[in-house]
Length: 463
Image (cartoon, rainbow, N blue to C red):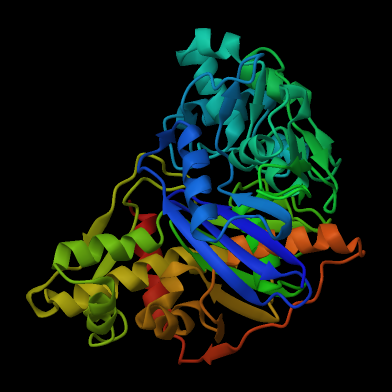
């Protein structure tokens, strides 16, 4: 049996799965936490990766490995490969004004959509580089190379022999703001617009390209390292997304994405025109506030997330007019980085824990439903994944808010699974990723509740 490993270096933790390369069967797994915050020294990712690998039994019997990681993070390296400053993560919104400035300087949203497939917001690497140039000019001047979290971890695994050996893939590169999915190439002019100079950027590998080898495995043979990718692209691989599918992923952030054969260019900025990890494209809508809305509501009520789910199902659809706007950390879609959460329609009759729990679930799902609408697709299937999808209330309320049935795959580490599948693809050398048997999907249907969406939309329009 040939084994492959997949890594998910997310905002909150590092997960590792080891799977059979032929069947996808899970053999073992491990995990380790990351420190909280919106900026972090990359060494913490490396430490967590080593701990997670050890918990997963190491790599001594593994033939190949790939890394999936959070998108957009800014990792700046000097000419010797040393980290210049803590990495700014996707959810750090300090570059919101820089994003506005860059959009204006290039000629507006349409110009950005045509140049890079997406209109940059504070999440994108290109905006963080502008912030760095404006606020930490000495650090910007020392930056000889800029890469993404998965690029940096892949580089470290391969021996970090020099910044000129940095690699990435189409999927993660498409979230920087200075790589064009349509042209399949970097836009150094956009990088220079952001920083005033053009640091080295990682070489973009093909979907089955090899980033290097790792020999620190306790065995003679080296572990082949795949190109890796961003977390959403890896999740698409992990769940087996096909053209016509739309995935709603409820994690730290909420994402709605589809597999497409052609690139997208949305001048409104709602849809990011990303590439995927297979050679296709991944139009995506992202919200900053997803599963942590449920965490916050549970904390406010003094209950567990599971108890919050039970409470939410005790209240009627629409929570008797109680609406929670879930912008707890600002918001990316719509682009309101300075917004805050708010509660509307509070009355004596709906001031109960059950109503608040229902409003939290519905508010989070309404934001994701707006993303589903923004894609402008008539999906063949809607797949609901991520940690938030483990909530019974989320699974049962989603069809009422989305206005269509949803399928919920078995819980899993989809990002790490997708990275493992990419590693197996590297070994196989086939034109398409290996076919791993799909797990059982549970279907959820319910009567649509358009009044929930309309009330939410009315409130959003007025704030």
